[in-house]
Length: 364
Image (spheres, helix red, strand yellow):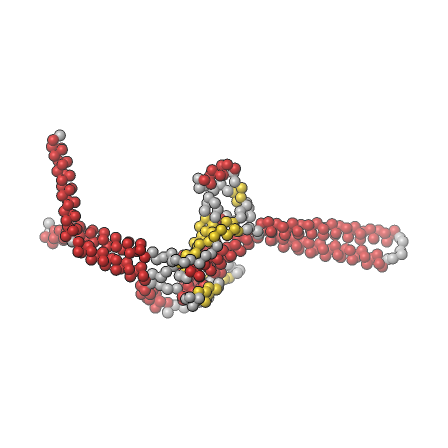
């Protein structure tokens, strides 16, 4: 037992000695560590102030949904973060909202919106703004220079083509880059507990950021309303056709009866009465169909109105006053820590590398 205790004490002393030696080694090389931290801080300052400012605008809205909760169980599930809502056939699942905002046709529709920033003298379409007015860090121009030289020899088209028959969208490489850039600047999230939708847009201009997210809300509402009311609008068009046909048939039957009665005034015969009764019955039947279709037409219009969702905007688009990125302080702290940890690690392992190199040379 005494030997074991002595060995344990000896190991603890060796560890303490090792830690002390490591601390001494770091202290002896403190100038190197401070220089490395200074260089890291300088690099962090260059990067932090080279990145362009980005402004983020968020909008929250609560859509109307045709859902039913499972009583108290549904309430308890909502508290636990589980959504037990069941969508009706014509409802649009909120989970698909991000997919709609990220779809190519939706993004292409945003290209033509007009954006404006008086302070920066910008008045152009969103596509032109993203393509020509966006600032980049200086190193991005260096990295993209070889690709721009290669693009001079390419023969790609410059127009977006939408084939309505085959539903194929053809875009160039530059347009694809703009699409991907715009897609990365738009974010749509859903709160599964409350169903609240949060839309955000990040741009280098606060005014343009607010304009884009406000337009996205308008386009999103239009898309969802079109989806929700598609079946009802198709039924309305079909009902209007039947209504117009029944109205035409009724007017025609009524006109035939009136013409026949006017042409046979004062005539008393069984054949006349039979023909008159037949025309009268045809007019009555036509009127009954016409009256029924008029009622169904009104019901179809009411159904379209009933299936049209209503969106309550909780937080409208407000022009941001502060930039969301870059976070300069975090960048400086990150580079400072990286330089400090890296320099300390190099000091601690460089002797090991030196010994390994000597062993390799001596062949031991």
